[in-house]
Length: 418
Image (cartoon, rainbow, N blue to C red; front, top):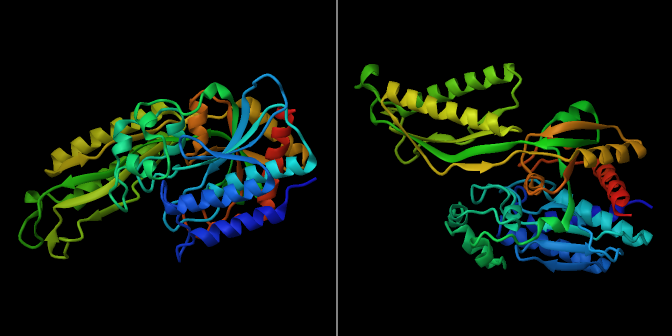
């Protein structure tokens, strides 16, 4: 018996309708939109007769009990329900809908797993609101720092800890760094997610199996402080131009990136926010200040550390040459992770059994699976083909491709749970 297509389509439709912002989807981490989305999934699970609860991290947990008398670790799966502002409907939510579809199909078939199956609809994976990714899953394993909890929301300025408390998180335990779940109670973590790049489109394949997840080092705000002046009155040799200094820095960084790629390193570098101060910039003014973001990603921590050292060195060099100063906000790190080879092979075999070719690929984007993997839990991911990228309203996952991923995940879970 197959997965209920109508259930999946109805859930995606309701999620879109409840969290549409007029342009795209906004499900703010530890905010109103995210809570609406969790409520949608909770109602659907309860209607199916599944056990539902909110854990101490205010995540939604949906359980199909196991039949084994011994307390074997559960098989957990799911994804996040928050989004970037004006994002797409499938980023994160596809993994939650997939998990519920798997549980619904098992109920309909009368399949009784020996090991409990738990679907997690996680909060706070996106970094858009607080500048840190994987907040919800990191809280589960006691991995949030005081600096993390003090981070202000970009929309309201309220601390993360206060926003977490608003939705029912046990903030006292999170403050103490206590794990909210025992990693030994989870035998595996599976996550289905749309691909956020173009590889599966280019390969003309519905799904891919993830081998590893890139970690990142990032600054939300780097400030280059020079000296403002009249554009016609100050000669080049006396200027402290923040724009030219920042541009020179990024050109140097790009050269280093290209060199390391030629040496076979896994690396991507981005400055997604860049500008002068809008209150003071003018066509006839030498800019005294620029602000920009910096992010470097790799599957290998040593590459991240080496490139960040290069970045700091180049900042010092340009500062001396141009007579400017670079100021940095807090460095935020997300650790890279490798996926579990046993589960990778199990997913590949399940896809093959169903007649679907699949691409083995690294994930350039971060996912909660990295946190589970780094907590010592065997983890794996399925990517589903998706047009038009992600973090935008134009995500275009085809429901048939989605069902290929769901069927693959279901077969792998069935094998491991019986």
